[in-house]
Length: 117
Image 1 (tube, rainbow, N blue to C red):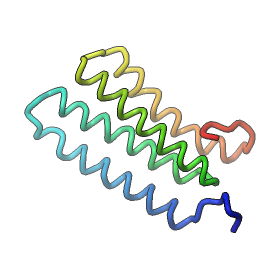
Image 2 (image 1 turned 45 degrees about the vertical axis):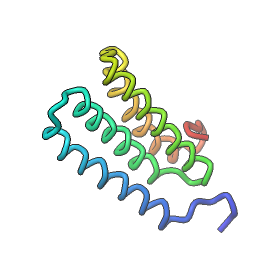
Image 3 (image 1 turned 90 degrees about the horizontal axis):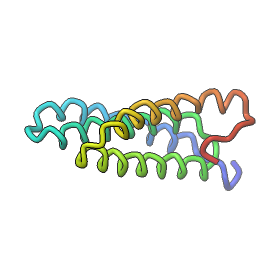
Image 4 (image 1 turned 120 degrees about the horizontal axis):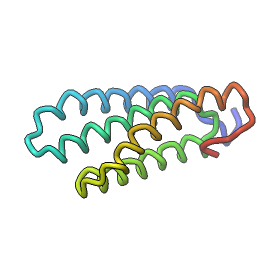
């Protein structure tokens, strides 16, 4: 295994853990009384699930770390959108974040256009 290559067990474990956390967040969110906080929990779940999906298709450690960094940036932008009630930003992120994650299998198949690297 090359130094820059991501170990498959770490890749799989991170993806599964992110999905589990996202599902738990989606289950807990309806019980939150403060509406913007509940929406933020749901949106954070979207970012984590998207990162978990994308991580299954990255091959290098750098791409792995960039995928996690983009998830953190998405969570920060979701916080701004939810608590400041910037609706256009929220709708854009709710479409764009999963779309970028769905491009990862295509990126791996084409092995040309790099999304996270």
